[in-house]
Image (tube, rainbow, N blue to C red; front, top):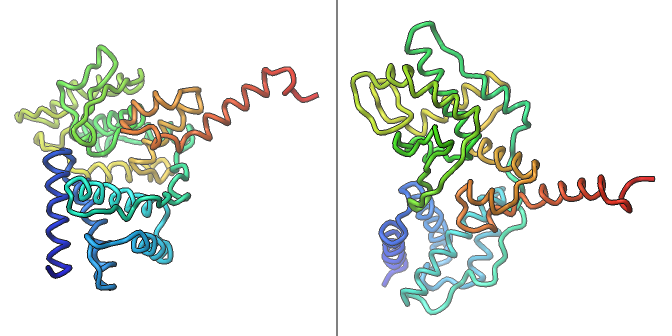
Length: 307
């Protein structure tokens, strides 16, 4: 079988596995497919195929990515996609060896994500202002404030926040039920500031936006339309410009985790709130926890105090 046809067959098998068995979101499936397709193109230039790749091929692929100035986190993500891909092929007996075995993740992949200082967060959360005195302007500002508060309070992803349903929001109990990657559910507690902003938005402002349309979603656009990911990014870009912060949704998510760890939260708690399947993903925040331990030790241990 020609390499191209062979690649298409095994990729198709993997996509079916991701969609049907793992139930991953379309965007996640698309990202995995893109990463594996990139590796397939790399192999094709060397007259190889995905099913016949060896460890040296994977290492050379990663090295080429670094040579092309691809950042360590992106390289790590591609390696993770390849590991899942070859594990699937191995379990389905489509190959007899896994070329990703014993390949270490790039050290750069474990760099702590960028986060905002608390003063920057405060300015950002206060940034949304009515664009006019018209009821639309005030309603949109109330919605955007509530979204920003929930982003930061719950460390939500963009796909999660646009999909939050009214039935999932428990303002009186102080939490929201979030459906994350793989349609996994988790309970995320929300602070008083976020709950107050949500309570204000869920009254008249949301009714103005929804109009006569009925929508199960918490956050809606004019006429009750579902918000797109692009619209959320535009909203955050606008608020960031007003606050001088240059933030992204992931920066708000990581800021939440960073500030929690800095205030003494354990990694298991942060893992649960962020919805990480494996605590190793959360361990990028380990050095923050260690810094906190060192400070407490220096402050309270009699032999650690400066003389």
